[in-house]
Length: 124
View 1 (cartoon, helix red, strand yellow):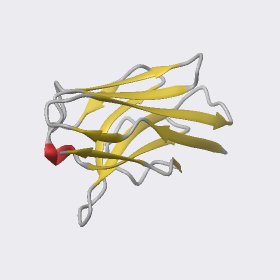
View 2 (cartoon, one colour):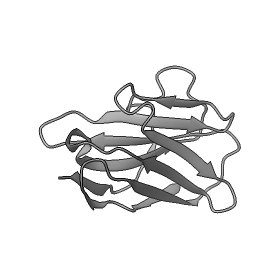
View 3 (cartoon, one colour):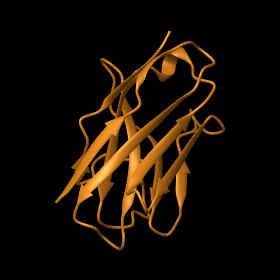
View 4 (cartoon, rainbow, N blue to C red):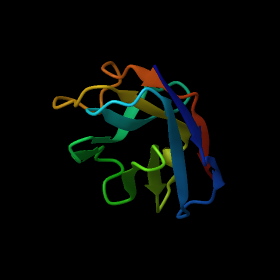
């Protein structure tokens, strides 16, 4: 089992920046995919960015060029650096993980086995 704990959300003005963190605890897997998802009220959960143990990274079109995903092995922590934030980025942001490398649709929620509780990001 894997536990995921997000932090770093908050209130920021348009054009500002935030860095989200997701610390992983529990079992360690040699092959994995981790991702950030977000969900605004009344909307479906949307994949934002993903990274896997091979180093493959994917971004949603809406955040490409503004957001950066990274994973630090020593700290077992996933990050999401968010720049040039827009009001439409407002959502609850979730960290997700699964113990396989997703080669198809890594920004779809269904394949992910483990989820964090979320951290709120408000751009206003």
